[in-house]
Length: 131
View (cartoon, rainbow, N blue to C red):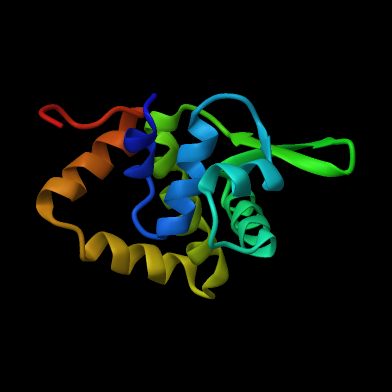
């Protein structure tokens, strides 16, 4: 997958997009290697924080290599944005107090098309016909 395709999979966060593009190029990279690939102008701690946040969002895996972590994309770059968004939605739901109320409000605010899509997904795991 090209770097430009991966950079569009996460909605906001220009640095996150650039880091994901570095990692889409192939093998797992340490923070120092990502920093070198990104070029000048960034602090090591900024890259490290970005990698840590992407890891906590589920977008990256990491493995200890020596004294540093090497980071890699957690899955197929084509669905990376979907995974990050879904996990963000789940964290927001879990942070609220009234799950039933939040879900009811969410469903009430859906467009008829999205409501049909959600109903199809809930009934059999597949989008409704025409979606």
